[in-house]
Length: 401
Ligand SMILES: [Zn+2]
Image 1 (cartoon, protein in one colour):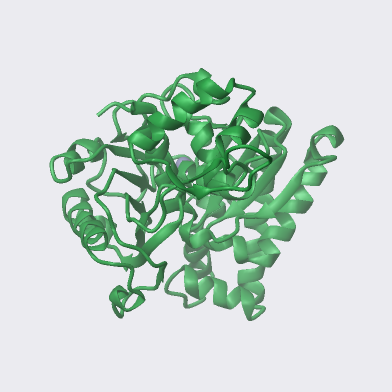
Image 2 (cartoon, rainbow, N blue to C red):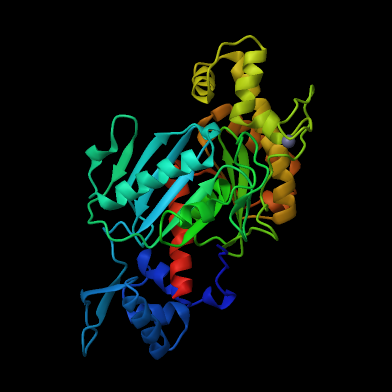
């Protein structure tokens, strides 16, 4: 299905904004919403009533009076598993249920074999989401192969499902287009497949976009311009422009994986070109490069362990990866002038990579671009993707009503 963005007027004082102010605690009453939005009390009341009727807001009792009738307090209903989310990675998937404020109710991590193809992988992940939605928030339900975070709650019916894919997603159709390392997924219509199995709105997006949205809403919602790098097995980025996720014409905005970097020798990339960022600086590239140097390493976890242990080969490669990411990011920062650049994904914990990336950024950027630029790690990165997926769905549900 096609998911359109909400109209621009919805940004200031629109239902989504009102809901967000209440969800973040910035507003607890209609009067607060009126003050924050600049809208008249009657317009705010109308919009609040509509949100209450949709089950997206609730009244929680009387607040403090400043003389006269005590105002009724507003809250986003919490505790119900109302939104489903899947953040698919190359080897693992994080699945969860989240409430309407974007808070995780239940989540678990599952091993995934992406090469088994979309029907098999998505079929089993959809079953997991359904199981989470049907069970109360119980930390022991996560099972031995997963890690879980839970909150108390009585799951309600799913209002929608957001899915992140580690490859390019055509935004208008939800189709995957020429992904690296995802054999059998090219052209697959994820939204149509899932819609045939779950009768709720389905929103599909690239995993870096979901990370960007989740991180922006939870850590930087007051900033208008932000770039988030996702560096795990693959590498990508998501862009927030004027407070909104910027997808570009087709949905490929921010996909830096095949930008060329200086590397000698330039390793061959899965796309057929040599010297792509993904072939130099991704987790998969580090595993390959170490093996070529005769180091025995099985996966990215092994690489990170070697770096933590001070292995010189692994550390040198991590520095090279950090410089490569910094080179591309410098172009992005010069071009786009964000307020914050944050790096997430498993390589974000790799100190030598981060130090080189930061140094290269300062070296290659205009002073005006870096004067007040924040360079950070994405916080709580395990759940940031499903949080972004949930916010996409919540925005859609609010905009559709
Ligand atoms: Zn490439």
